[in-house]
Image (cartoon, rainbow, N blue to C red; front, side, top):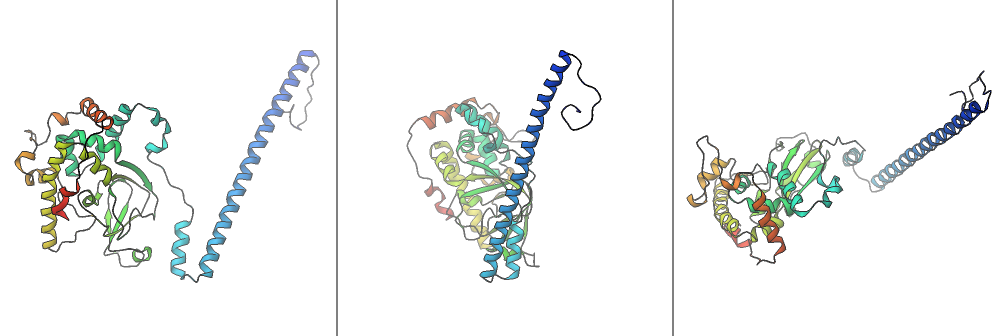
Length: 336
């Protein structure tokens, strides 16, 4: 330390090997000191630039709110939401791992099925996983995405055209029926607030009909959500004739449940579900659509055995072939 710092040193090299060693130590110290100084300088400059940009942004935002005479209440809500805060990432998304794109298509399909299919706790998807596994494999491969919403973000708002089904994996969210504005859910009256816990799903109706969101969904804490795109689901079903026939029977039962709910003046919104359990769905479906029940009370069959080689091979064959397109819109006609 004393050889490459200003510290005093009473020891000096006395011969050539010692002088050579002292020179080497001096050069190593110079390199380390320069690297440390450069890294510290770069870190300070970056922190100074981020602080300046943040201060400039906050100043522009405050001037905008002041010059446009925005109310104090709304201004505070805007500033509070835009205040920088850290999100604790408890889950790595597929988009965060670019190396997965280098995998062969068959491995990607099997990986996405194993990752996402376990989150589909909706009875209709549980039924399809057992009876029509091929279409679930294709849905996982083409229609599923995963994202994280930070506190205050809104996955959808009232009267927006619905595009996806939402499965909440973790975190905390709230649904406000009929709400369309941020201030509507900042009042002291929280009687309309409906907590959405992990394991819940919302907006299933978008799969079977034209659907507009009936309320506002907001994250009350950092939340992870799996979304299933309705258009991609329809495309997947169009390529699977057995699944198409099965879903026709399901949609008829779904439409009857919705009509009964409307007649009973129940609130049919994004949180409404027709069937809460697989057992309830099996009792409502026609006999030819039901799956066998084992002695232990579980449902299953050969399709649900977990051997994915055949479904993946059939899926790979479907996406490589042209196939004939069939319209799914008429399937949901009774539910419109």
